[in-house]
Length: 569
Image 1 (cartoon, one colour):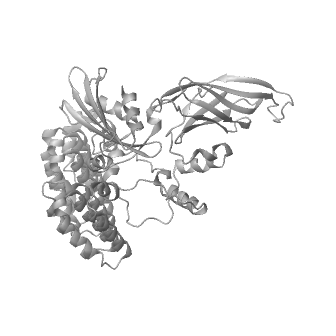
Image 2 (spheres, rainbow, N blue to C red):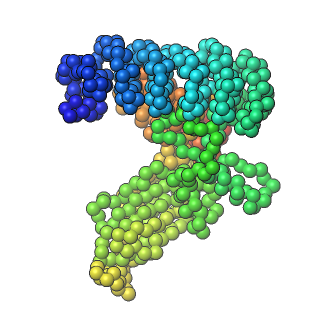
Image 3 (cartoon, rainbow, N blue to C red):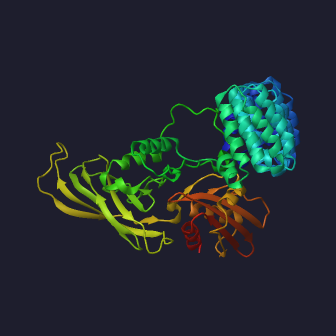
């Protein structure tokens, strides 16, 4: 029992268990392998860098004697250790590869693969060693999910190594020897090599032509599509359709295409009218996380934004607003929870408008509120167009009202604004027991907290797995560059986090992680500005007395670039 408690404490507060390390080391040789496993994983959480080699040898002595469940626990502990002591990655990588070659179930092998990928992410110098181990593993991998994941990683990372051609054999072997899902993933990986390395294009072209003779439709279609794109020899096309790809909401795309077929038009279908897929909160981890299967599920669950789109579309006042661009991730409370009225605000961004959704709850059992609206007063050039009231708010029965505002026309770059808000309604007293209300009511109001629109409300995060390709694709026509002093920032890590949160953009190339003991760093950010304009930001940071930042922004439209410069300045 005590050993379990120590393990649980070590998971959350490793330093608190350090004093017990000597006793724990004695338990590593315990005949009960469950006790030995918990002891060794606790030591992995609490041990010092100098003890890693010894611990690895001790683990090796009994790994074959414990169940897969305990092996997964050990691998997870090693993963944590890799993040704590990155300089020991070679020792742990060799140990993990030895484990990878042994017999084991899916969860065990997946844990090892995830751990190796984590080491590759955090230690660029370990990339080639890690990729070589994974290449050898997929030569005899019985798990389709792991094979497709590794192929996705090879396509993304292998093409950017000093000698990318050495990975082609391992990838093409999968086309010859594996099932259709793995073959399709291998075709995508081959295309990425051809898109990123001009000298490899002839070889990749030959292999893709062979793949066009495959028995499976998916494999043939991918090979045909990728070859057609590569033959154009345009970096912008390679970036858009191979390296970075489309990032749209699948239910949103289906709905937009259906709407397009119902209302015939001479204009071609515009992808900018399709809502974007939300970037994962896991951020960098999603860069190398392919779908668990190559084939798309028959039914894709609607996202939170898709649900909002459907709810707003049925309101007549919002018919002409176009597609919903973005909804704020978390409702903002405008009152205290203990007050008589509880109001929360969700911001919905459209191309030229904002819709503020107010979720209202009346906590008074002796009142019924009618014709409930939130009156908003902007400080800048925004204009309130209309309010859609909640007809009735009974006791503890939630209701929704909306306020529609239009964006400034005179100065499109002035996107930030503060709104003062007042809840207005008609009060009718009622019997708490029966709920019967008086016929006559009286007007009343309640002052709410202010609501702010920031630059992040105008930008949707998108992930660009290959930032340099996206940078070239957007081009420099509307590029702007300025230098700023962030005097209040004391560290590069603090500056990076503040920039990401302020702009609301997606960090790329794992640039949100600042290496230790560095006085300079480059942050890469990607997003889409409302209206469907790609927006990329490169921030070069230098640490001296404070942090100095050189910001370069690119877009295919001038307004998003001006917005970034005006907001940062």
